[in-house]
Amino acid sequence: MNRIRRIFITGLLFLLPTLITLYLLIFLFTSVDSIFNNLFSHFFGRTLPGLGFLLTIAFIFGVGLLATNVLGVKIIRQIEMTFAGLPVVKPVYAAIRQIIDAFSGDRKNIFESVAMVEYPRKGMFAIGFITGKGAGEVQEKTAQDVQAVFIPTTPNPTSGFLLLIPKEQLMPLEMTVEEALKLIISGGVVVPDWPRPQ
Image (tube, rainbow, N blue to C red; front, side, top):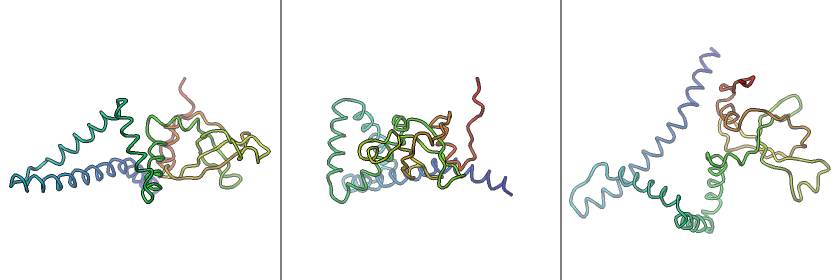
C-alpha cells in the first residue's frame, strides 16, 4: 500500500508543474482569442479561430526579444517600476517577482549551497539553502557567526522559513541546489545519487 501511494504521489508531483503550465497557457490563449475575435468579428463580420493563439505566441516572443536587448531591458524595468509604485498592486507584484527571481534558472545562484540543520527541534533534520552570511544589525546583536538559511516547505519550495543559524551548527551537503529542490518537491521520493560517482 505504501509503495502504491509513493508511486501515485511521484506521478502527481511530476505532472503538477506541467498541468499548471498548460492550464495557464490555455487560459491565456482562450482569453486573448475571445478578446481579439470579438474585435475581428465587429470589424470584419466573422471570427478567425486560432487568432488568440497566434497573437499570444507573437506577444511572448516579442517580450522575449525585447528582454534580450539593452533598450528592451530599460523599457521592462520602467514597466516594473510602474507596477512597484502602485499602492494596491505593489505588495503582490513584489512578492511574485521575488519568488520568480529566486527560483528561475538563471537566479539559482541566489542559494550559495545546501545544508542540513536540526529543525524544528533537536534530533530532527531539515534541508535548507544557505543564502548568505548574517550581516548588519542581525550579526551585531548575536555573539556567534550566523548564516542566513532558507528552509523551504514540501511540495512548494517557494514558501518556507528564514533561519539565522550559527555556522558551526550547519551540516554542509554535497548535493546541488537543483538536486535538493527535486528532493524537497518530491517529498523525499527523488533522492540524489550517493556516494557521488567518481
